[in-house]
Length: 259
Image (cartoon, rainbow, N blue to C red; front, side, top):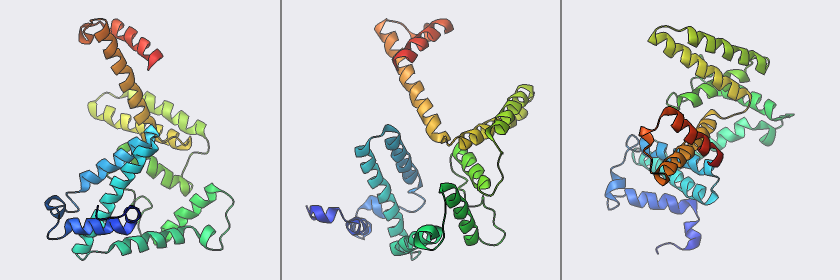
């Protein structure tokens, strides 16, 4: 092995390995990668980190964080080769940002709780924006739609644009359900359904429920239960698609008790 165990634990070793892989005599696959070609790999690694978090598997999380870190260093190496920026610039940028946005830790600002920290954070971010920029401009538009909805609602809530209590937004949900029921055309149904989801996102935000996490868990639960239904059919010599709706529903009730 070209590196000792102590060297393998160091961040600089990863940087050196990536530089070697990108060198003229390096790996053909790594050498041909660009910022654009790596986009889907970066997204995939982010989702795998999320899955490890959902599973509560610390060993898996350790590995997936390494894969994600690889993507970050690889992008920094590509940028360095193109004369765009260096890895040190990335480190300097995030360190300076953390220092600036935590004056209650690295300065003389006093805060009473996490809510005040969040309010100050938004004010400090506003200082960093260009004149005329919206507080919503920095939210990535390619985020999953539910996450995007929850994030922009969180941003505006920090500057006071929010319901006074949960009852108001729940009443809004009732209103949106009624409007969806009244929708006639396909376009109206799509618009009203979007409003319904947006309001649900707002309720989740107020109750500190992460929508993506909640929906992923609901998906996982459905997956477990449907797999159990399929297993029951195999054990009983049944063909699922030949069962009546009532028979399928009976299997679902069995699955709910087991999975």
